[in-house]
Structure formats: C-alpha cells, structure tokens
Length: 185
Image (tube, rainbow, N blue to C red; front, side, top):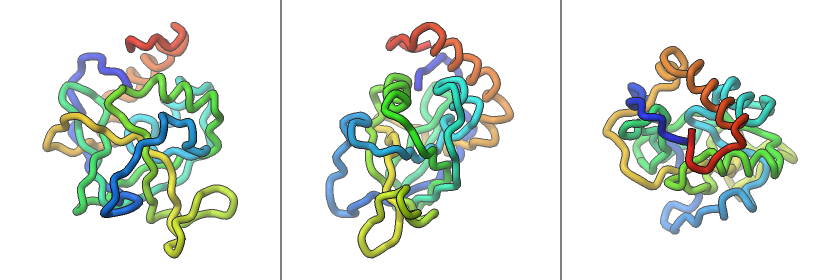
C-alpha cells in the first residue's frame, strides 16, 4: 500500500503463528509461488478496496492466525502484520486470486512488505483450496508481513471503515486508472 500522508488508524491488533516457530521464514518471491489465497488483515479485507484494485471481489471467508499482531504504522492509514507470540490476528482469506491479480497486489503493496506463508488456525484446510500443514489440519496461505517500524498501537478495521474506507477506495481506483504507478498515489 502507499502512504498518502494521513495518520494511522486507532489500531486493532491481532496475530498469527509463523509456519515453523524456530525456523527463519523465507519470503515468497513476491507472489511467484503464493498460490491463489491471501490472508488480508488490513485494507485488503474490504470489498470496496478489492473492487477498486482488482475490478472484482474474489471469494472471501474468515481467517484467524496466532502469533501475529496487526499494528498501526507511523503516518499511514493501513496496518502491518508483525510477529507477536501473545496475539491472534483476525482477517479475511481472499481466495481465487489470479497471477494478474497477484501482480496488481504486489505493485500496490509497499516494498516494506514481504509475502510469507502463515498458518491459519481457522478455517482448517478445505479440500482443494488450501495447503494443509501436516498433522494440524491448519491452512497455510500467503500474507504480506510488515518489515519496518510500527507504532505501539493496534489497527482497528472498524475505525478504518468508518473514517477512511470511502476515500481510500477512491484513491485505489484512481491509482489503478492511472496505470498503477510504482511511485504511489
């Protein structure tokens, strides 16, 4: 996502558990092998944003992950997902993403995000739709994980929806109409 100079939201934190607790977590090569599902915990969980960026709203369902926090970011209206063993992150699983849609999302997301696999504790792997973690039944999906500074505050999607969503979706639509410039809005 791109900063457009607004202060971060009030903050809602929730978390998810890394795929291997004691292992480094290699990033996907920015969606080259990410599959067709994304755990969206911030602005991408909102249908108007997906519609503005992708031209459609893919199938959505609840996703919950342990060991992560949805943190407010300095001087930004969108959050970052960061490791926090004491937290649970709630978001939406965006399913059925095409290669072209992944390319749009990769262009949209800041360079400070790494696309990494995370384990969802809800929902369990659905036949033919998730990679299951052996022995757990948990789904493993891609998530954009934040790699830079965060605030101590959590990011709250309901506050974002009430205060910023309409304007943010319009900015996303204008960005796409302008050819998705790499320099942001």
